Length: 69
Image (cartoon, rainbow, N blue to C red; front, top):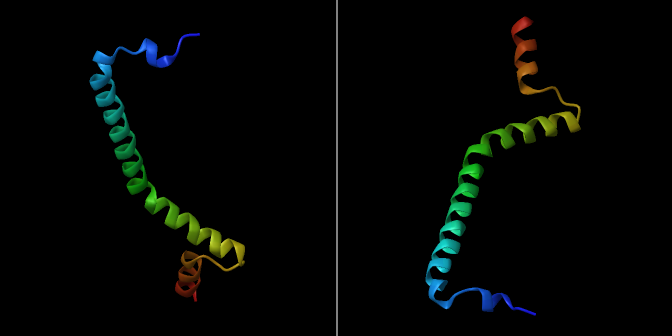
């Protein structure tokens, strides 16, 4: 049985650490960017969910009925 540590050259450990570190940073920044750009959509969905759950008219519908009367 061959262990993983036996297949990795000790000379390449610095390169491997650098690659793992860079991949971690890329994943972290990607996650942060997705969080920043999807915040607005989530806020709108939550507002609609609240009104639909309690059978309240949406704010746009309230404003439209006020303008008609």
